[in-house]
Length: 127
Length: 144
Image (cartoon, rainbow over all chains, first blue to last red; front, side, top):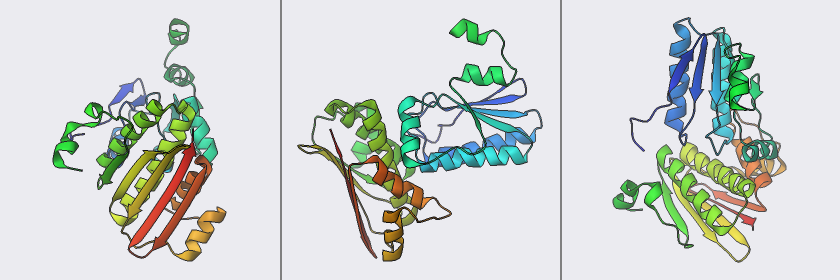
């Protein structure tokens, strides 16, 4: 685990796609909030899509960070969608009684992007 | 945990059924502990759901140790019934009142401590926590 690690943020149309691929730890998550804020400040993004397909563990801390990113994005005029929560992760979150507040959730990143009006043919292709 | 062990990386570590012991002093140690524990549980035959529950509970305990005590010791070992996870730290400890509220599930804190520890209780088969100033010890078990 090195200092070079970061979470890539890709702009697709007016959406910021944050694809979390690596085991998250606190500093990474803190840095992520700041990067999202900086991208939003540029004024080009109307939505933040966070894809959690590769995330095997979501604990209360991770949830708080995602909720914080969503609140911050909302205050800056963007809404947040979350995709890819794995079945075992979803069940564990329910067991713990932790929730993502004020974000729309989608099964896959494709579904999320379609809902944001960014992809039309993607679902049919990847189904 | 030696410096050599730290630099070897989680992937090269072969877990052969012996206990897993780690000093968790930074967020990166927490990430490493989660990866190694997940491997250990998978090798022991826990379901994906149980693996996720146990690693999430361990993550909550270690996160608390990091946030409130600057770190702690983590140990996971297989028993005849399943897995036992223990975390020790030398932080200020949790008061009796808060501990009682945590057990009842009524504790609320701005930092989310309540959700995390109540979560451990919900995710594991047994969960006990003993705390005095300078010494907090949590033990939890999940049956196979």
